[in-house]
Image (cartoon, rainbow, N blue to C red; front, side, top):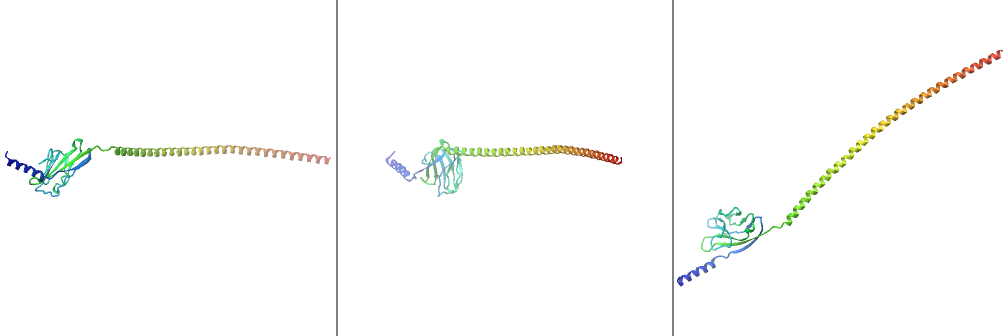
Length: 238
């Protein structure tokens, strides 16, 4: 290789390094198993001139490593898996990547590459995804509170039901006692009336017999008096 060609090659490489925009890095933190969106927005998007790709790893000099999604100016034209979605408006330059149900293997650096016509004009953004396990303390506490509330409600309902049954039973018993007492009182009154009626009838009969006996004695006394008067008259006559 001649010195002229070597110098030309070096100039091209240095110019390429100088003209290529530096790829900025953004850090996004999310939880395992929960959808996460890696932002990528290009305000100068043109449907006729721009396209883009998402890849795993740092943005290379061209294209995307381990390409996940590739779009033209309006829609997705290739996709590695339905796990990767572009839910923004591609026509407006919103090409943010949404990863569904991320796992530990999904952690790492992702490349959003906006392909712009011309040499070394592509816009590159490196986004680092950090995934953490969701804390379970809050969820467990919520579950325990819900369970406690349900148990308390059930207990109160059962107690109210039992109280209703317990309160209803004495009322029925009291009613039966009152009815039995009333019947006993009526029977006792009838028995006393029957006994008193017998006594009254016996007393009346005794009084009638006494009056008859007195009448007989009076009649005998009168007869005796008449006989005595007749005897006296006979003596005076003699």
